[in-house]
Length: 490
Image 1: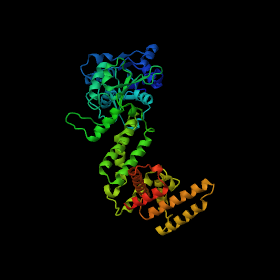
Image 2: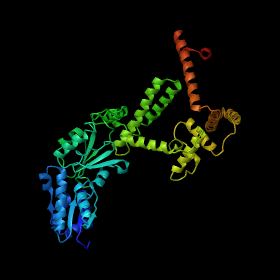
Image 3: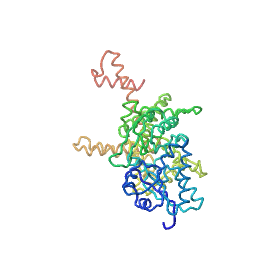
């Protein structure tokens, strides 16, 4: 920088070794240096190197509003540059343009006045906070200064990182603003001295206790997990909002011990169980039970989203937004004026769009077979092969194949080769599923119906045994067979 330049420089998140070399060079060569605050570990290094500076901490103490603070800092730096013979540096903790309102005002006014201005970046506190929490900011994040949240409250719909939580006065105003969109018992995380080896700490606390913490300083940041809206005066929470808030409270510090210890892996069996309960309610035609079971399945979705949100990943809103986008994208015949006259047209278009969305084509059609029950996987494998013409022409051919496979099973019956028996049983079942597909019967539904009939008839045997004062175990097979036939006729 040969010409006189106004420089906005970052001092990094706290560790003096993170101050970039160009920033140190600019500090050493500047005619004047202004610091937003001297309360930063890197300032000690400046003192050791004999770098003179003017700290602006007193502006915060005498100003009556933060807007007044920003305006006075901007005016002070710009006036100094106008009257200086050389470079003027305004240095801030972190990155000079991240959560630094005064820096932006200086930059805007300098450019409007055609002043030569340069920005020397550094790691912001954000990068250190991301590393401390292990979160991905691309998953959805709001960022704010603790000074600005009270006058510009966050939406509460995304994870929030608040910087510069430097004292209990600021924390108190911040807490009140956050409790407009979060329950008071929401678990929030204080991160102190992020990126400073040996000094960095993390502490989970309830939101209502934020301003009771004595260990707040200018290197303290706050992580607040996203939350759905709660009742805010004239705004009414929806049933979905209330469900999300309830699950968040169950997972909170004073919530349910069982819910708090769950994770994605531990909930896997419950997802499957609740999905089967939904199918069972549909098969029974029981709308009251279906309503209840859909609620239980929805709980699993909300729980997984809440767990992810707590880890700084996706939220329930992200799930819903992604699903909506996918539905619109894959239904151009509804949303974009494309043609699809029949259900088969819809399926073909859906699969074509899915294929186009893939970054690279799968090596095999069979790569698209989902995980899950074997009946579902067998049916899906057959459907995938049928799309390229690898299929029986009509159901009679499949029935003939089923007869062949049954004969092969009979041939291995009684042999000691369990592997051969298992293989032939699999072939018979696969052929049955194939036949069901060709005649338009869902094999899962058909098998469930058979299990239901079997259960009802066996209960009949048990009831008749009790009526006669006997136990089922005491009955002969012939007696049970007779009652079975009677149950079939009833």
